Image 1 (cartoon, rainbow, N blue to C red):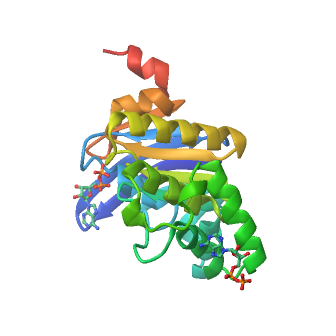
Image 2 (cartoon, helix red, strand yellow):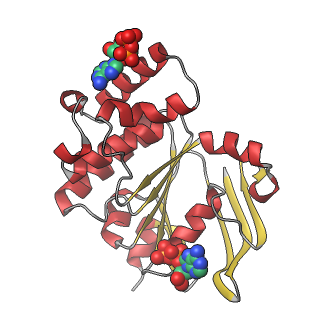
Length: 228
Ligand code: ADP
Ligand code: ADP
C-alpha cells in the first residue's frame, strides 16, 4: 500500500532522510520511532505529500506522490487522515462543528454530515460532549475529537504524529486502544510517529527505528524488542 524506495530528503545541504526503503501493507499498524530530530515527522509528511522528497520513490496505492498535480494531491489527501500531538482543534467551534469541518469544506450535504458526525462521535465515545467546546475537554477527549475529524472523509490511511505525547500513560493506552479498534473495524492502515518505545510495544505490528535520518532497525515489533 505504501512503498518507499531509496528515499532521500534534504533541507538545503543537510540530508535529513538517508536511503529509506520500507513497505507498509494494507491494514497494518506501522510505527516510525526515534529521538527528536531523527526525521520521523519529515518522513510522515512525505507520505501525505505535505513535504516533497528530494530523491527516490514514494508510492501510495502505486501512485508516485511527487508526480501528482496539485488537484490530484488534493484528492489524494482526502484518503489520508492525520492526527497531531496538540490536537489542532478549532477552539471557537464545538465538538460537532470541529468534526463536521472537513465534510463542510468538501461540500457534503447537511444530512450526510449530521449522520456521519453522530456515527463518529459514537465510535470515539463522546456522545455527551457533542455540543461543548474544546476548552471543556480533557486531553484524551480532545484527541478523540481529532480522531473522529480525521475519519470523516473515510480515509484508508491514518497518520499519527506523536498523538499520545501530550497524554498521561492511562490516557495514552485508551487512545491506542481506540486506534486499534479503528484499525480493525474500519480496516484503516495506521502509520504512527512516536519517540516512545512503550507506544510501539502497545500498538505496532511493525516498526522502523530512525536515527539521524538513517534506518537502524526495521522489523516486526516483537523482534525489535528481543534485540539488546
Ligand atoms: P523528528 O520528527 O524525528 O523529531 P523532524 O522530521 O522534525 O524530526 O526533523 C528532522 C531534521 O530535519 C531535524 O534536524 C530538523 O531540525 C530538520 N528540519 C525539519 N523541518 C525542517 C525545515 N522545514 N527546514 C529545515 N530543517 C528542518
Ligand atoms: P437545520 O436547520 O436543517 O436543522 P442545522 O445546521 O441546524 O440545520 O442542523 C443540521 C443537522 O445537524 C440537524 O439535524 C441537527 O440535528 C444537526 N446538528 C447541527 N448542529 C448540531 C450540534 N451542535 N450537535 C448535534 N447535532 C447538530
